[in-house]
Amino acid sequence: MATFKTYDSVGAKEDVSDVISMLNKHETPFTSSLSSRTVSQKTYEWQEDEQEGGQDNAQVEGFDATEEDCTTTEMRSNTTQIFSRTIKLSGSVQATDHYGRKDELARQIVKKGKALKLDRERACVGVDQASVLGSNTVARRHASVSKLIDAGNIIANDAVGAPLKETTLRTAIKKNYDEGGSARRFMVAPYVAEQTAEFAGNATRTRQVTDKAATEIVHVVDVYTTALGTLTVETNREMKVDFGLLWNPENWKSVVLKGRGWFRETLAKTGDNTKIMLAGEYGLQHDNFKASVLVTGISE
Image (cartoon, rainbow, N blue to C red; front, top):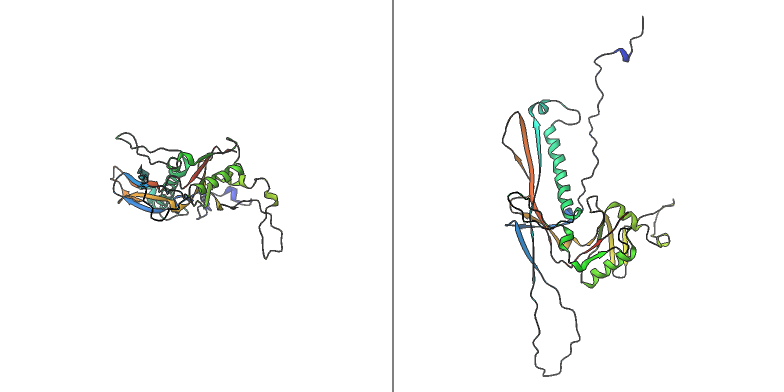
């Protein structure tokens, strides 16, 4: 009698793992670092001021006071932007058993929720976006980071359309220092972070590695120290690829319209399906436009 083999078998049970693998792209280093401000209007404002510099100041005894000019504050504004993702599942798909999850709707809510946070991160640092007040047919957009920095604090790469130059980074650090800023982070796209490892002289710059018998090859600049301060170089997958942001989270705020933080809404039924909307309304605030520096013109 011929041997009955698996090739002859019909109806064998599938072997499918109950673990669903998804790459972790849901990192939001910019928005996750910010404190929050709640506003009650879609267009919101704040004021900034500039400290006067020191000057030679010595008066004779019995002097008469001299009037000085006084400067006013500057009003800044931005608008909130509505972010939304929607899930629509048929009744049949919810009734069907799936490998790797007990509830397909719950899985989709988690997945879309993470995507929403990436959308917001991108709106802050991944685009060069001006504020749009919107209309009945045009969506409101909040100004991105690049539009909330003073024009004098935008530094072009020393070789525009080329890898980041160390001289450019040092110019940005000096500009921030001269303006009285305290930026301690330099946020860039991943490939720009790799460019910092190619700065001239890195081969002779070392850091002490203790308690290690093996040799460690280090080809990264994660901390950059100058006489004017020490920076942490941080990567952001959502960062606009030709930008570098010299910043301090203390100078920025995440703005949320009152009652419009991330929320979940079950939409009206229109048939044999379930519709869930995830949404939120957020903006961005830079307390002082001269507190950060933007580097532009970076390329591979």
